[in-house]
Length: 349
Length: 288
Image (cartoon, each protein chain N blue to C red):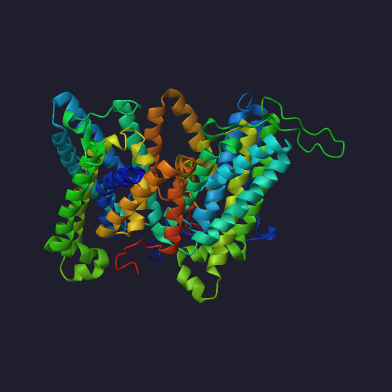
């Protein structure tokens, strides 16, 4: 199944220079997605909850990029952790406290622990067996949520109470979550930014580089002494924790947790977002999720059936003709302009 | 008496799963291609036979046979055009592309037939109950068991007793060596793919009473079909029969005895089995 050198879909990940000394003017584009996101806060009147949803899906896609893109763990069950996070946050808000941060942290922690436990079990296997195991885990989570009605509300879903003001500690009044969702938007954006920094740090670290090697050839990495299994488990756990955060954010933002958050469809859709944007680029998650959500919003409003054609067609087109996704396309176009005589294409570190 | 109900229901259910999945197991075992869209052929078969029966007064089995023919032809076409370029790509590309095909199948069937499941078009002779001596049992389910057993027997002779089958098994076990011996693996694969899709279409058509035909069919039962394939062992005909019957029996037992668990029991067992034997119960030699 996994023949060496066959598994890469996007071009191999190249690490940019680390350290501030290597910063150049061209690196300023890293600011672009964040400036757009902050700018949206001021101009996106009436669309803040939609913007929040996009940010949540970006985070979820980013988490999949860690597991599937960087570590090469082919999973179609990532919704398990998203849903676990969403249900944890919802249940905490219903039964314990409506403080959003408590719910968020516990959901992240629980999803991470679930990721590590299931990862320890399944990451010994590979190929179709591992892929099926991720499906089996997601199906088990789904059945638990479906059957444990007293806790999860079953197929009616779980209604989550409105979150208490953010950071209302030590007598500080905190930031109230307004019904237009403006506070929620900024809050979500900050969480996404924090996770992005962590993800950035991780994939550029020696640990992240070793996963790059594991994805390309696990046997050789084992031969040179890399603890392959532990590295995969660690990355899977981190990715699961991140997906759990995304789920918790969604539970707080939409104030409803349903079985859809655990469905196979969601796992599939997040994979679509990832390959659409481009794997192993971190920013691919931003482009893919935002593009997907906006097109979905536009197309589904017209006709949901039409929308299904769009997702299916997009998936097939990306796999057959657009390797590397939208970011890959951007790279190719940029490469056309950047190529000057005497300068090697892609020479820009 | 409950035990007979569980046993018969489970076997009937397992037979439907077997008919639909057996093609998938051989194609996945032979070409190592992850094909998630196999269920779409079963769904198409269900829709086709229903249209044949309703609008063209085809008999029940006739409708299913026409569905099998059309699905086989379409499967061959899909193999030549869409699946061929996939073999050289990685698993991820295969998963994504075939997942995309599921979405397209959902959209097209919704567009043509609407979202509601179509009513079963059961002929008179399959309605009602049969007296088994000690109890009565629905004729339809007995019919499914019979058809499944017949097909399994037929496939046994084709796969385990014919030259074609010997070539097929050799190619599953070691495609490279089979090629070196002059076996045309690609042709073999196309033929198997056609056969597998035809069986899926047939199974979807006659199994509509157990797995209702609706646009989300391919997605809803996708994991079940994959479970049969993976638990049985990729490319293993006997394995897929055993796995299909096991899945049918486990699901049915769970539904009767532990309804509060839903499908959890099945997933739990699948999970444990795959951890224990990642290559399935009866893996091909190439996997071990």
